[in-house]
Amino acid sequence: MPARAALARSRDVESEVTRQGILEAAEALLASGGEAGLSIRELCRRAGVTPPTIYHHFGDKQALIDRVVDDCFAAFDRALARSTPPEDPLERLRWAFARYLDYGRAHPTHYRLMFQQPGPRDTPAGLASYDRLRQTVAAVAAVGRLAVPVEEATRACWAAAHGITSLVVGGYFSASDPAVALVRDGLLARLTTAVPSRTRRARRLVTKEGSR
Image (cartoon, rainbow, N blue to C red; front, side, top):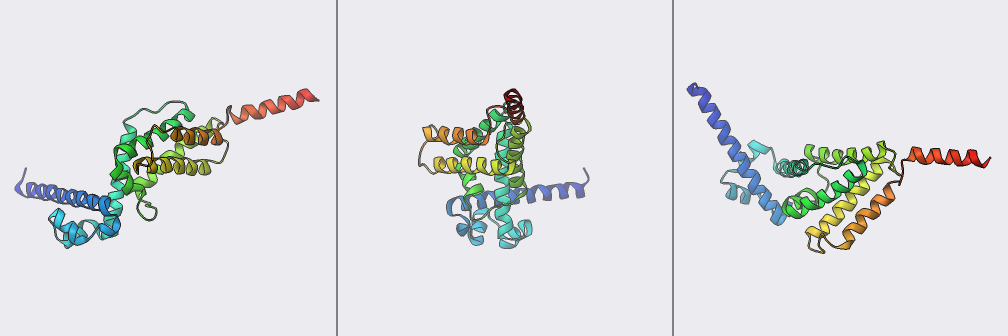
C-alpha cells in the first residue's frame, strides 16, 4: 500500500475511533442525566476531545443526541432480527410485543434513550423501526383479521407495548405480572377478528339468502 494511502486509512480509522468515543460518552451522559445532563464540557472531558472536534463530527448538540438515539433504534432492530418471527400474522404481532418487552428489559439504558427523552425522535432508524411495526399490523389486515384501520392499530400496539415496557423497566412490576398478558391479549382481541372479515361477510350473505 502506498504511503499516502496508508496515511489516509490511518486517519480514517482514528477519526472513527474518535466518533465512537464521543458517542459512547454522550450515551452515558444522556442515560444518567437526560438531555439536561449532556454538557459539552463534560462530554469533552470524558471523550478526551475538544468542542471543535465534537462539532466537526456531529454539527451540534442536537444532532449528536439524534445520532445516539438513532444508533439505539438500529441496535433494537438488530436484536429483533436475530429471532425468527412466526409465519401467522397475528402470532407475529403477539411475538413482536414480547420481543419489544424483552429488549427493554435487557437494555434499559437504550430504551430510556429511545423513548423517554422529551419529544419524538424522527431519526431514520426510528422511523424505519415504526414502519416495521406498521408492516406487521398490515400483514394482519391483509389476511382479513384486522378490525380497525392499520394506522390506528399500529399506534395502539405501540402505545400498549411502550406503556408496559416503561413500567417494567421502571420497576413498577415484573414482566411476569398477569397485567402484561391482560393488556396484550385484551388489545389483540379488540384489534382483530376471530375469522377473516371476508369470511364473515360471506356468512352474513348466506344467512340473509337463507332467511328469504
